[in-house]
Image (cartoon, rainbow, N blue to C red; front, side, top):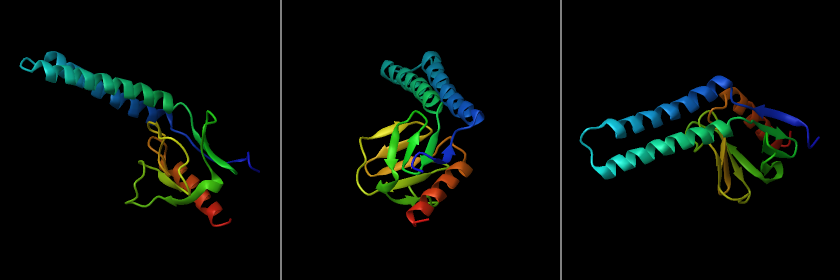
Length: 157
């Protein structure tokens, strides 16, 4: 049962398109502002070009990150590329309340110990110390179901 997929959370094409398009639009707007503002200090202009380039870079990172999905198996939480986020035995709890530090439409997994280095897949998941946040462009219904399954397994069900 350890390789049986219990839950899958994947971004819809529309959510991906909207999220990536917003970052591209932000980058284009900032670059346009830097290029066309008549009275701007050179340092400010360079800073705006840099901010625009960063927005384009983040759009590409998000596009690549949201090409995959997140799945919960009987033994681990992993992404569609096989990268293990954490083992089920390492999970101490789930935070998904309104005031929890979590991604949009998602939940946070509290680990019993630090599971690894910091990591971030924009729009999908992040890991900082003993916490893993799952969510972003993933629909809330899918992350809610995944969090419910994890909570049930933690209770021994």
